[in-house]
Image 1 (cartoon, protein in one colour):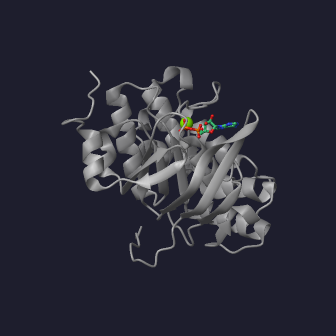
Image 2 (cartoon, protein in one colour):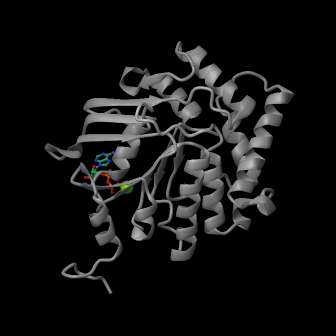
Image 3 (cartoon, helix red, strand yellow):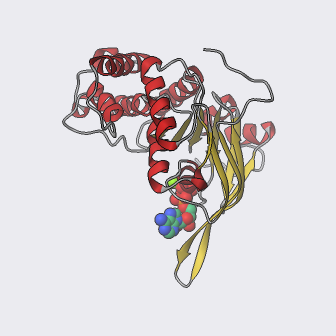
Length: 287
Ligand code: ADP
Ligand code: MG
């Protein structure tokens, strides 16, 4: 895989002047306030900030789950991405045919119908949430296969089934679950379930991966391993990744770190990132 880092790289996600409000009693609460954010393919950015500051809202808008009041959100799908092989080209092709676009398009989410938006999510986006939302009766590899087959209205060819199976196996191996592919969620630890979740989110070779506090149900060590894994996977899969996290340990390894306060998103400087990691002199230290 080649990773283009030239300044002409089109961001996989480009949000501009995005504002989102929700009804709140008689008034409205501002969840996103004039947010600007661009993330390039293969880049991983962290978003920190207090509870209720708008972090999950940011992911929901970036993923086309909620339409903002104003502003623009566009997603660039990867042209000729190779890692998915047959699977990827089939997915890109079907999206292109069904949405009237061509592979490698930049789609503006605001211009899409609900249905088209769902299709973009299915074909080009990956989501990882706090809880792993695995189906109790399916093995790890089946979780991944089912995801790839969802929304496919045609009878699957043997070739496509094979491609799905091979990709599921390759991804589970890459996240360290080669030995556990045929286990049910109940037979896996919390950290292993989150690995299945991450592998599943990558099945469609997403242009954009949206990850919301993936370590909050895990202990420090397991959580740390999950962040490591996400950094590695976003690079190898060339997915633009937004990681909402409370864990400051890994912030220096991110391509950028943003802090969200009252719906306003602000990029942190290297010094500010260091200060978050080693709160000292003057900063209140929580025992
Ligand atoms: P965070 O993820 O940082 O905790 P959220 O994005 O969940 O923050 O919430 C940002 C603000 O928007 C909060 O004030 C929250 O109460 C409000 N909010 C989020 N989702 C909804 C919703 N579906 N309806 C009404 N208010 C919401
Ligand atoms: Mg949240």
